[in-house]
Image (spheres, rainbow, N blue to C red):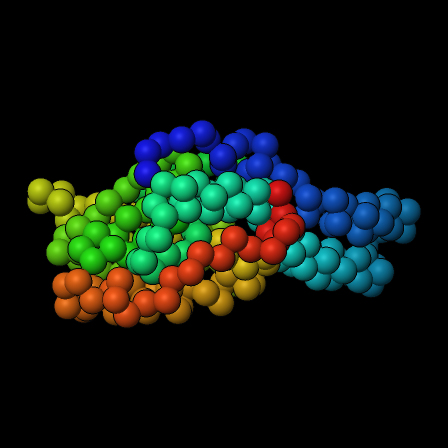
Amino acid sequence: MSPGKRRWTLFRQLIGSLVPLIFVAPPIGLGVQEVVAHGPSLKVLMWVGVTIVVGWFAVCLFGQVGSGGVRKAMAIRLQNERPGDPFPKWFVGFARPTHKSLIDHHEDLGWLILEDELLVVLGSIRRFEIPRRMVTGIKREPNAHSILGLGGWIKIEGEVGGEKIGLRLEPRIKPTLLGNRMKIGPIQREIKSWLQQPEGTLAANEDNSLDLGSPGSSGD
């Protein structure tokens, strides 16, 4: 699967951050209005509480609104370039440890595929392959959404040619951040199980039909 068109664009990254702000702006505005009119009060604390609750739900429901269209396009591309691919696969956001961004912590979106002897990540413009024998650890790490209990990384650690490498993955399977948060543990366990599998058994034992997702799931 060769590098293709960039799907995880700046616009898609931005809307996932901006849409939740639409929902929290009204209670923030009312709280500020109350402070200006009457000073600190219990009513101000009420608006702070409303902002926190509304903000949590807004981020959970709309924080990945830009990724749905990427998933559909990448699913079609995967079917075209790897027809009948039998290996376990999940749609994920991913980033190298060197990736820094104030807009979104994902460097790209694409498919995590566990081939017999390779962990492969196929993004819209990035591709990474880590031989199974070079994977030295699988662990969890927090990310920007972890403070809300809505996210986290699966970090793949390895060593190639004496140099340590790392790749961070986060599920982008479900339409909400909480739904994807619940997928982190199962996927981490699948990767750990893959590390212990005898050679050549994965394709024979897994049911890996590709789920394109329902129209509008995860947004666009």
